[in-house]
Image (cartoon, rainbow, N blue to C red; front, side):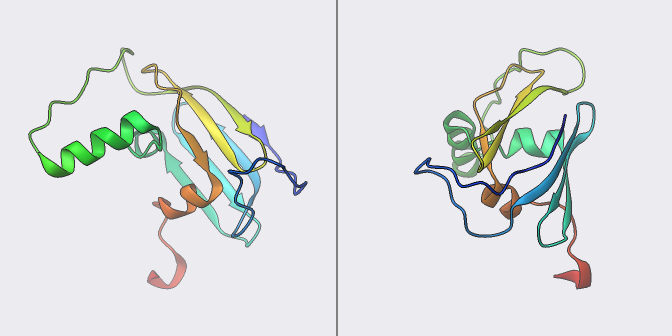
Length: 126
């Protein structure tokens, strides 16, 4: 998936228009999501990182349970083989939803959330 983001306004009340916005998205279904932001930053999110950090309610509850109890049993994924991205779609002008090979497809990754979980090292060690 390659997409150019449009700066057009969106009426969704959940949309957060502050902060950097993507100008280019490139989803490699085997590796991850690369984003070029309007402030010049480039970020790469490996698929496993995106899946673990999913903002969906079930994934958030699992992360909270794991923080309370490190011996939490992880649910088995429905997919077999390595994790891949089957599809992705823009959600308004504020987010992307990714459908993973393990059956997970409920996480909506807002641009602000993606910046907050960006694993790409910042220039200058910041």
